[in-house]
Length: 233
Image (cartoon, rainbow, N blue to C red; front, side, top):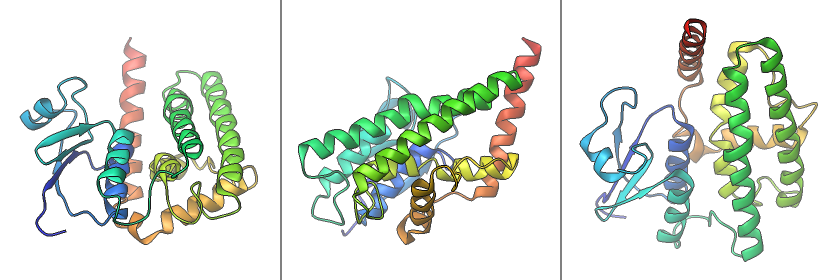
């Protein structure tokens, strides 16, 4: 590609930042990376680049910022369309399905997981995990339909839904390590279980994944902080 002309603002542990990293890696795009500390003072570059939400990820390309993780993934796919595999399907209906299931992950499934993690009672936590499991069963069915018996949601190569859901896998693995509870359970969602292993084993994906132990430590700190706040409120 020649000289680096992209700058990406992110936070090392963020699943949504990981989406942009994976997309750039799949397209073999070289970029400069700027780490943001979201619990401290936000950089002037971040505030200038994303004045509406003031959060990562942000991709700055040709001095123009692109915000929101899935929007960035689409931008990368369209901008570097001659490099690497297509991330979004070519057929309009398939593209619509990919966007639908990605929205399901972000708008319904992951919020249920977060709610279960910070639930104040065991009853609320159990109910939250039921919602998480129900969502995974729906995603299991979606995978079977969309993959057509191939390795990924998009077929033979990693695509849009793979990146969207796959970005949470390190988070889930770290969570399983802390609680000893299986979230991606082979006996309940065998297709997703095998998909998850393929995704995490992909050479380009592995190069940008955060360390599971470091993420597990961060989750423990987050949960302890949340419990501390709830107990004093």
